[in-house]
Length: 184
Image 1 (spheres, rainbow, N blue to C red):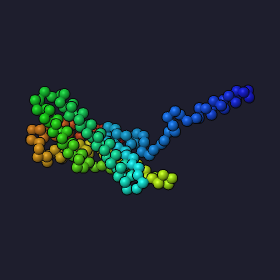
Image 2: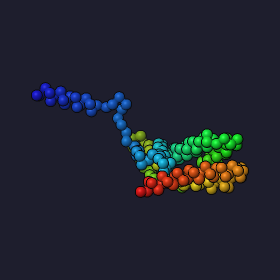
Image 3: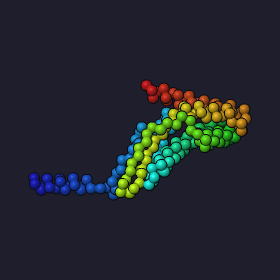
Image 4: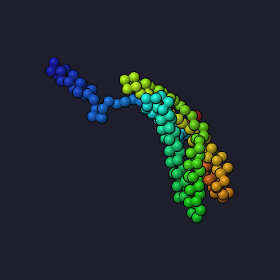
């Protein structure tokens, strides 16, 4: 019995040893609440620097870039879906204009972007700040902003504008349905 207990203790100690990947680190803003879903585009960022304002700026930029990348990917998928569904000879032009509109919007501002969290840490030993930031934007709000931008964009002709608005309206309808389902 004594040897069995000793063997069990040795086994437990060996299993508690570090993994071959190193020690697992739990950072802020991880998990489902900070991941994009059918209702939200979400992004998190981490910045490190000896100056707190630079660490914050790095985290802010990374989080916003993540959100912008997701919006851009979603719009590309929507445009590609439109191209696949239509036999319109001008479909490629409309898809290009749609994606161009999104790039223009992303380069200027992101509508209704909300900061959902910010945490700052200071490592005295390294004399270094680490900042974590999380952002989110409702999908239906982003698509409404795109629609508004499409209406005022002078580079889009009336026919393309109508098609782009139709595409955006379909995405708004989907996002509103997901939003209503999420509120229940």
